[in-house]
Length: 298
Length: 298
Image (cartoon, rainbow over all chains, first blue to last red; front, side):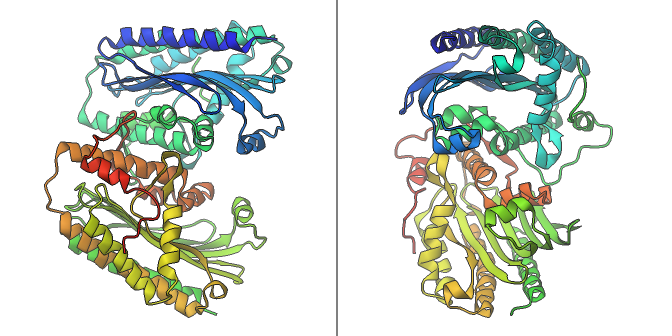
């Protein structure tokens, strides 16, 4: 049986590595850290970057919390066990330049009464403008890391991301997806816990080089006021997904989590216009047309 | 038994009156109307105003829909009946000037199998900066209209608004409240259906004069960039309430309602800053200190 402290320590190192890589990428802003403790047990390190050269606002959060599982969560999980432990790293980055995509990553490990032991996580990309070669690069990189661990992982988790990162009331995906997985166990995958842990860390370590590459490709690309306006509208959709559907956000709000850490995923500015429709054949419309499930990018 | 068509027609007239009053108030922008039909039965008139002198964005929507109640709603209501009729007027106004408050109004009538017949609604005010005399004026006007119909209405519905317009995860009220009521029947109130209908219309007709008075008091008040920033942060909270808690929004999203009509309540621009805290004793902090339940304004 894998030691949960070892997982938490590995995740903390991944948080450190990612923050260092993102500060190098940005070149201007630095992360500010807040260390916090949770009343019921455990705590975390919230790290937020704001007003950078590349990153307008972003958070790279680590937490390792434990205690009694709230009734509402027990019900939604359909379990009777109530001593939980959860550790993970969560990231959302909102860049300044509309040609640089929003990105989200999460790796997490969850334990109930030391009997249930689940790995979950994922990485997904939300370009304001979908660029074919960037989308292919992103999915190919995710496929490579998945393939190193299990040949089913990329196809399964890619489809899972398409289903999960879906804004039902808009009938559009949040972005171009990526991978998403939850409640992975040795029974379900044929991999040992050690191997699932390895996969989780490997995915976490894929984040920084992939996002830095994508950001460096577009960070100096000029943009118009119209493109900036479109970025704010897309961020509005991001807010809709996170507040209406995101399981992590809901869990946090319902269990009285640390609100500022949970809602660091929201952008500095977002916008809504009544019934806005991009011009036919515009770059904005082309992006909308690609916000659907089942596109094979890799 | 009251005729539901009569209620729908009265609500349409109230929509007309309110739109006319708000166009006069604004002096620049006009409402654009979209008439829509619902696949399952009925339809509505969505009226949106954008880019006005006073009103940055607002919607005054009427709808009268009927059909089969979705399973998920039957469950949440705890009923077996499934032929529903619902009509109402819904308003949200976001002004330009941070010294002019956001306002929301709803009056509605709901019928199930012609046996259950409920009136619901309310008006609540969300000032970016709470001004004591304006808050008192607003609540006093609501108390006056309630008192004309039932001596319990204002105290009961004021407390109900405090409970309902509450952002639990922030531990703050959305604004300074107002009145909120739901599922009113003759059995619960001692008033006839005709009297409940009268109350509903009377409340609807209170909206325009009260908001015009409040807006005219502050529309020319100068504001700083800092005050505008604060307005966008308060709008962020408004978005949080509407997407996470608002029953009407949830109902609309879950029942595949007309998305652009439902989400017209979201502001043109909103903002989130990580862990923003106003300076001690600032006007912003004074407003935050008043965003709590149980303040008696009338």
